[in-house]
Length: 162
Image (cartoon, rainbow, N blue to C red; front, top):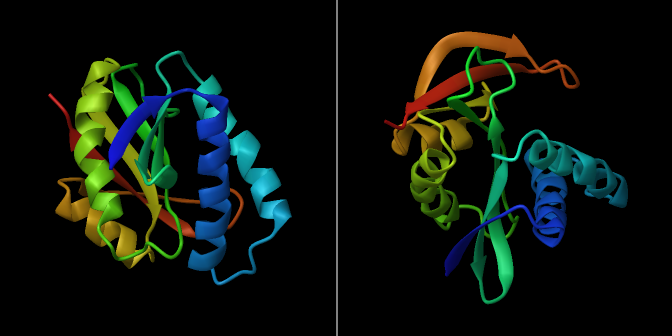
């Protein structure tokens, strides 16, 4: 197992594939090439947001099993807040502890890129993800919002890195 910090296009492509499959499974939709095609620019947008944006990919046996996309927080007032914009675990590997393994590496990688606080938004009804984030030290806030596409309620979580 290795965790690679990168901005590489092939890593973004692997992340987009995982994102499309994982979100389809999470939302009980059929995975399609349309989902993958839509995910590619989403992941690339996160990487293009800043020179400080990056992917962490956890790789085992030459296969990416989980990724996180991190960029400067879009809604923060200063540039010391990094946003965990996307995270996906390859379906077929859910419940095996891969999310926790990569989340252990997130604080150090964010600090290395000049962030002293992390934030993320997660669907308030995604109990599986919330459980993992809380177990890894992320703290839920009272701040919520409606996702602009799905209209589902999201909750903000933060992690102090310093």
